[in-house]
Length: 487
Image 1 (cartoon, rainbow, N blue to C red):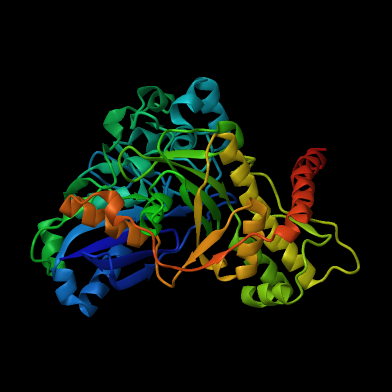
Image 2 (cartoon, rainbow, N blue to C red; image 1 turned 45 degrees about the horizontal axis):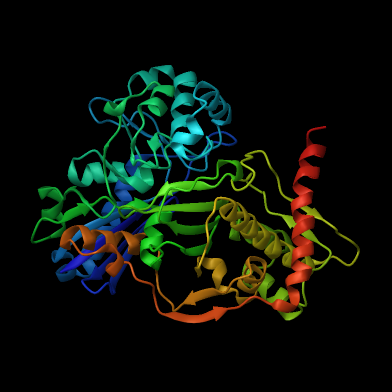
């Protein structure tokens, strides 16, 4: 028996096959592009997601026909928050508005004013990235499109509809809409009413490890699958990645250094901290929640700087590592795309401070890496304010290839960071694990285990005091710079 995981990302769709022991057997991917019709806008045509899914699974079938024939469970992971609007005939009304679209900042304020209990119910601040304010924007600026809305689906759930014919979402992805009562794991009539919608416009809800439907006969025939597979609820990309990396027990977490950055921790109960712009969501497995601190420019900051100085990112990090002795004079605020945690400010912008005639690509590159480390520390601070303890951390993402970068983060967090052996533990792998659980009824915690660890990066005790001082300067700069920008 084999199990398929599909991750509908922003830049591409990835398909991963695993066996009953959780070993990866094969993978395929297909690219996606993002449309930016106006500043702050970010959209995709949902038809492109489906085309990419077909290409990826077709490629798996061509390479591994016997393994694809044996698929018994399918799991889904996807970019969160995207508003996919369907009419009464299941036709897509307009391009999907994505997670990194910031057009609906005004609508966020309107939602919180209209429903003072919003943060208490949703467990989150209204942010432009979430789904609900996007619908208010459509209502205000595209009333004809708003009037046609029959269903609102998240990206992976639109793919699910085409796979199974069912309207279903899972708890972890639904928690990012701003329509879910996150503590009680159900749609909130009060939150929906703020956007003029009802539960009739929403998909049904299941846990990420539960069945949500079955693959259609047409697709079984296309891919040569012998027995109809069950399709699991799946998860939002970070919750699915947590299932892939084994962060499902309370206190277990990961730090992700990808385009954006995430500090993720699994919880045994609902623990919001809206004042610190913490994301408090349901996990992809039952009776479990998670928190995330999310910052929008992690490796994106390093890639931006590398392009400016005409080097690749690996060259910049190698240059920093070759002469590193602790924090320097330069400080970088990594708010190139605005910021979520802890500031919830889409208009925030990045800054270099403390430049001198001695500043060069090495010292400024170090400041960029440290700025990202301080952003992780910001996330830890507000998670701690919510009463959360992080017991273990595993590093994932492209930035985790730099031992020095992880050492900076470990020193700032005051805790060791484990680095897994080479392997893909991302959303598609976690989704495949959820497909296995849905098909077999296995205990999620026996399936979603941690990978083998290659090494552990420990904090530098000799640099703790210096980094504490530098972090204090970093924190003070944001308020001062925002005040100056407001003049």
